[in-house]
Length: 81
Image (cartoon, rainbow, N blue to C red; front, side):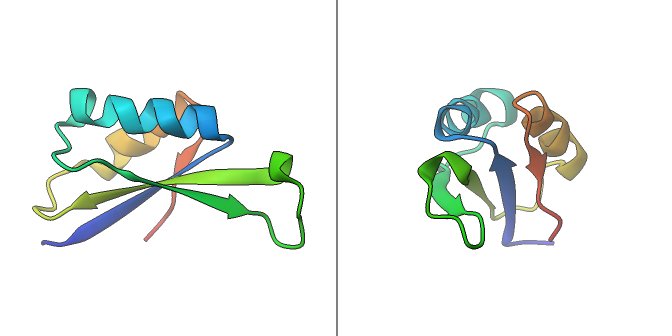
């Protein structure tokens, strides 16, 4: 299995930035994760935006359940593929 992309959904930018910073330390992610603002459908208010942390996993070695548990520490979750 190769070229896997994991998407972690976080409640706000601060949580997303913390998660992105921790990924290298906790999981050995070699590339800087991409942060993406995801406004909820029909909402223009920035307060209602979720943040996505996109993690490239070219070797397919990251454990999805461990990533989900990690995101949960920040009130987030791993988006199902």
